[in-house]
Length: 340
Ligand code: KG4
Image 1 (spheres, rainbow, N blue to C red):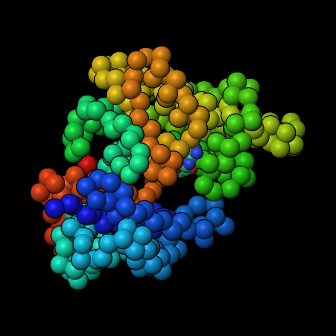
Image 2 (cartoon, protein in one colour):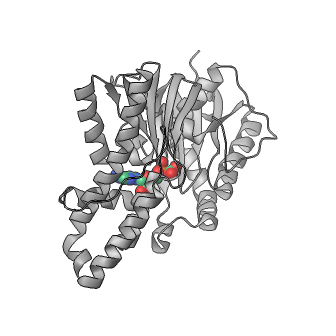
């Protein structure tokens, strides 16, 4: 009998539900929260309230679009963490209630694992190759920047990670400093396309091993912009495309330097990316180019699976389910999960 997994994601500001059958996507419904735009960042209290409003219609829609009935569900997978506690509480409580009401097993998923396994979401009519083990995943989002060695669907080793800010935060702060709105990554990406990436230089951090640091480069952008505006008040407006292109290039250089180093060190040539920043067009192009040059096989998730979505949670939950894992009804969400 086929495994039908309902996935629920509510770790930050997207309420999402998805249904997969034996790894194939039947539906993926997402309600994004526009309310945060006015504040230039996610307001946790507003996020959890919006999840409360959205979760029932989103789950109903996912089940309807999948063409199944609630009784067909084999297991319910949900994001237990990491994320905003108030947001996670909504998804976790809903998953527990549904599990009890339908008498279906519950499977907890680490949100980061979802991003790593996003390349395993299968869609009918598409035959995208799936990563071969072992592979390295560059996991880049608003909360994380990691290089993860993946030896199997549930076997991970973090080779390197940020010691301060995540790369997504650097994108978001850059946009905020320039008054470009929130979330910043997509705007910086769009403006960078018509800018000169070599126009301005930003100093790179010197961090040992495979770890990252993005707080210094954020500060150097702040000082650079401040100094230039003191000389010419219109500097930002005149140069915003070039600033975005140069800053984006600097961030991508930092990410790629360590990834190349990790690939050389491990000898692994299967390279994937995941997380919100993996939507960045500059990063996607660069990783494919480097792959071509270095004989890597590269795996990029589809755009719709780069940012938070429940399809990746359903797939990760399916791997856990097949591994015999079940979560008890007294589970509580956790805002930080050390291991995954
Ligand atoms: O994975 P995600 O949706 O949420 C978590 O942090 O878990 O990632 C959100 C991050 C934000 O920082 C956003 O600015 C960034 O991903 N992002 C991008 C792009 N699209 C989203 N960064 C650069 N370029 C993009 N196209």
